[in-house]
Image 1 (cartoon, rainbow, N blue to C red):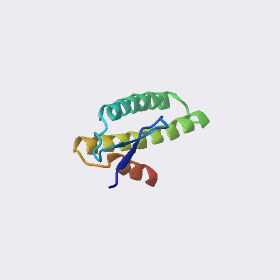
Image 2 (image 1 turned 180 degrees about the horizontal axis):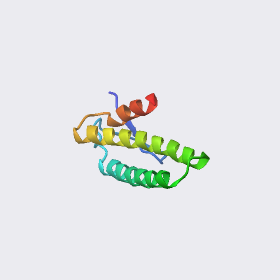
Image 3 (image 1 turned 90 degrees about the vertical axis):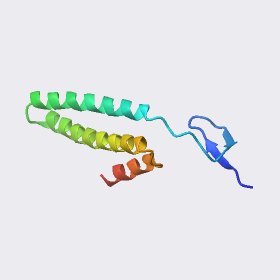
Length: 98
């Protein structure tokens, strides 16, 4: 008889357990979405006030990265809210394409 082994992040222990694991909570993803949205708003404001140059270029790069991260987080949240399994793997695939 085979048993699934579940590893818990941050621990060295491996616990045998049933094959069903409770799905992760969607709340941390919404927290990330909220944080990324607020940060993106800040960077947009900073870009509007910063003259063209190396500082603005760095801000624009960070802005683009935040847009991508926000998209991935929203897709993950949407998939989890629909109850699709492997939402994290799907979000990872999307992130790896960029």
